[in-house]
Length: 168
Image 1 (cartoon, rainbow, N blue to C red):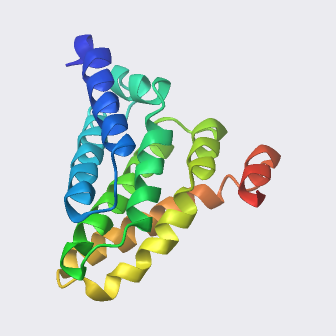
Image 2 (image 1 turned 60 degrees about the vertical axis):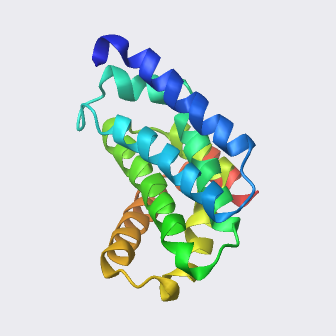
């Protein structure tokens, strides 16, 4: 997989971008976006906890910005309560992606990309769906991933460049 990492990553990012561009907030649109976020998230697991060629390619191709924008779109969706779990699963994947990259690629660049794309607001806004989710495991995964992501992000708030973006 490492020798073809650019091909896999390009296909995954292209599909996520297409889905983002056609996102309309409907239940099926949320489902499609969550599935595309899954692909990017699972690609990022390849080679963890090291900076594998596929993770480097994901970051080089702007995966952090794309997956965070997808999280923002999901967090703003208004779907029936029986589809709310798709939203939390998508946000959980975005937070997980952020957590993975914090481990394998520490640095301010990805934090700035995530904050500019609106990941903090998306994670907070998505909490409104928790009371509607009948599956405890989805809630536990969401809370755990979001807590970890916010803890990792807060460690970077000491840097002026990150603080500027956060305050905007």
